[in-house]
Amino acid sequence: MEILDALLAEKGIHLSAVQSEQFDVYYQELVEWNSRINLTSITEEKEVAIKHFFDSITPVFYYSFNQKLKLCDVGSGAGFPGIPLKILFPEIEITIVDSLQKRLNFLQSLAAVMKLDHLILFHERAEVFAHNPKVREQFDVVTARAVANLSVLSEYCLPLVCKGGTFIALKGLNADQEVSQAEHAIQLLGGTFDRQVDLDLPEGMGSRSIVFIDKTKLSPDNFPRKPGMPAKNPL
Image (cartoon, rainbow, N blue to C red):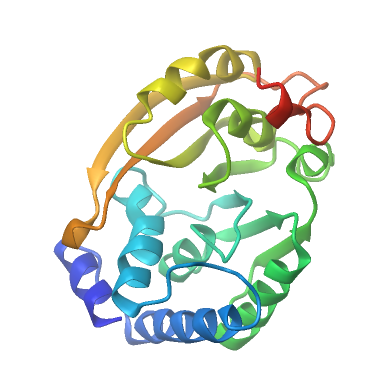
């Protein structure tokens, strides 16, 4: 993971020895578990460092995480972007929700090996999770990466964001069309589009867009709809 250290140093982020070791362990555990369960098609070290770890950290270049935030990562899969953000900012309280138990088993084992605290894992569909009164509109930041189109994501995620908080969607290149199509959903769910940042990953490993949506009003109680409905019939 030396390349990750170098790339982040170029951005003014200098990993401690502990953080560097945690990313090394993350990579090793990811590859080992991936031989048993399907977590990712990307396993070469340099690609993982850039396409998974660096990519997960990119919101930090445009949004301040230097505070004790409560963050929820929806559909985290193998832990992206939640775990890289947790390594970088260990003081953040992170909740990860995913619908597949096998992925959560990996994350639970990873958290134990890496000695991560203030990390909560939920085995639940996003549509159900967001109706839990203990978590609904309780998070300063909600993230989602490579989960669904922005209209669907907004229904999953905005009900979890507290008023005054931010929903951060990590998307592929040129999310303009998704932003346009999701305008109604964003407004209906209490959000206001803030900005879209387009960027290129290092080493020519692709282009990305990050969409920032502010939560300006409470979400209507009837959203998200029943499991499957947001994807089947986007707002």
